[in-house]
Amino acid sequence: MKKTKLMKIVSDPKMISGIHNYCDKWCERCRFKTRCAVGIMDLEDKKQDSKELDLNSPEFWDKLHGIFADTFEMIGEMARKNGVDVDAPIPEEYWIQKEKRDKNAREHVCAKASWKYMEMVRKWMDGSSKDFEKKADELMKNISMGLPNKNPEKDALEIKDAVDVIIWNHTLIHVKLMRAVQQIFEDEPEILEDLPKDYDGSAKIALISIDNSIKVWETLLSHFPEKEDEILKMLSLLQKLGRRTELEFPNARSFKRPGFDE
Ligand code: SF4
Image: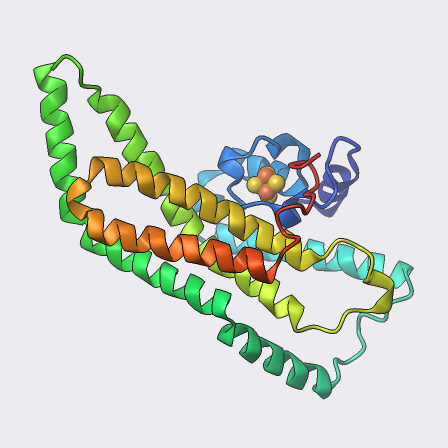
């Protein structure tokens, strides 16, 4: 995408500034897709030649390289206009402190529990392929028999949606919680003290993802009652993680996300 086009999108008054900072990045399902610069760029990308969407094609990497180069140039220009020396070297002390903060963040209870959940989901999905195949056969059989009081198409859609939501969110919860806990170990400039906290915004996304995941695990439980023990473990971990996140970030639920909470 050309820099001028990028600038045009960003400066369109319809765009909601900063909306992409506090969302789940699931643009395909987002109701603000046409009011978010990232969403518009995603739509534009979908219109491009399929070669540009193929990770194995040189066109894809050329395009990505172009987007990064344009974006860095734009950021550089804005920073210079505001008197920031973007070429100044980063002091070594910064990296030492960052390493310390990252280590503390990885040890945080929310980071550990969300990592554990992510691993559990991956293992569960890998180990459940046979159960999904069995369920698909059962639903196909029901469709062909046309049994009354059964709605196999609806069941299939429900299961697919539940799996999509779980897969999308299982990494997002960890990523957002890591971002939130990393920030609580950072020193805050005095000037920002009274402003809403970015870590509350990140924690809110994690909480919403946890809520959505709980809902769809319950749906899966109704379709796979034979997997009750495993699903209940997942639910229990998510509920504990949600409670702990609320405790660590008491203002997260009331954080106002641009667009979504206005
Ligand atoms: S706000 Fe919506 S369109 Fe924009 S990045 Fe987030 S999910 Fe995508």
